[in-house]
Image (cartoon, rainbow, N blue to C red; front, side, top):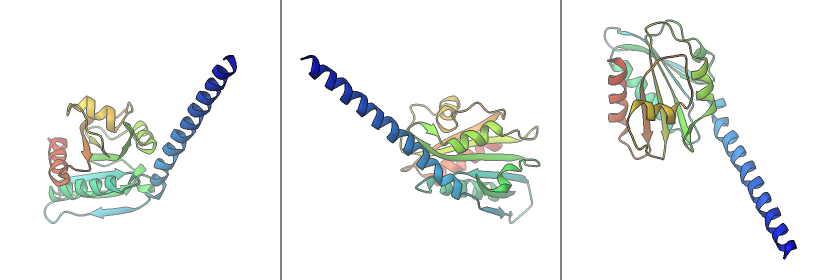
Length: 188
């Protein structure tokens, strides 16, 4: 009987170790996509210029975060902003001086923002008066649309920047409407 108990404990320890290693590998693999985000594109408004905006994104595995960043950048451009749309690993993503608006986002895996987004936000020190927004994409809905709840899910970090707006975008959401509402909230 004692041998059976020892065997059960050994099996349980092995299972926990395998699950822990799997979770660590998944976390690393999910954030690997951020290393492909090195692009930079500047979008100019068709009319009068309202200001400058920086939109930084980690595309994630599915690319849905990049799609959301493109929609947000387009909404800012439509409101008259010159928008620099940058992958999170782009050299231009680190140059935050001179922007009126900065938006940062990426995928949310198992209730946590990707480590590249957390790192970026923890190092972000925008100019005084810069409006900062964050977004995350994922498949799990939140219980609340309260700013603090959304921030905890999509940013998961204390940032020196004062974050004015946050968005959690789900796969089944109408992204155009939610991104537009997010931009309106950010610019208020």
